[in-house]
Image 1 (cartoon, one colour):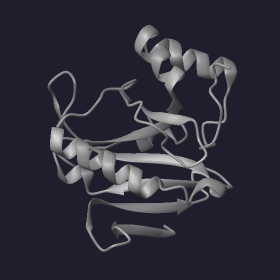
Image 2 (tube, one colour):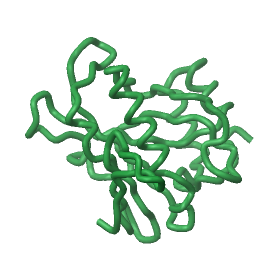
Image 3 (cartoon, helix red, strand yellow):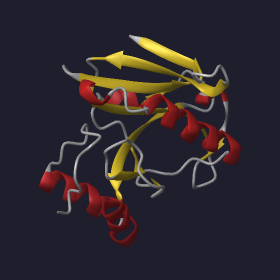
Image 4 (cartoon, one colour):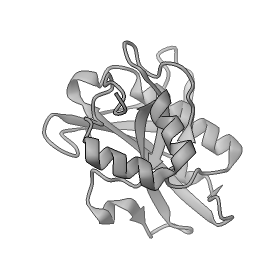
Length: 173
């Protein structure tokens, strides 16, 4: 772990802590992970209880674009609603997520950039799942809503966009 946040720059406590890990999941990448969201039980779309933490990974060059604040806001909203979007869920579009970026929504995924065992921790009751947040564009969010997450993920495999680039263009261009 390289660093972390528990308060805003003005000293206001965050709803959860956010930790930063350098060179994870690979060289030149930074991953931000919530710590404390799993203290709150949330309901999955099927009505089952769950615990969760969020992770968002980017290139080191983009690590100062406000990811901790974004994760904190999303985690706070999940705590308030006590609901967890299922795989393929979309949050947004909600305007520009990062300065100089066209990314405006978040896609909820399994942690595709990490080993499979990284996806769930069974030491809590109910188990804690790790959710990979992937920033996407407005037209990508529309594709997910119109055609479903399976088709969107097939599209990503075909186009192979750089999902770590927080300033990337749409994969639909």
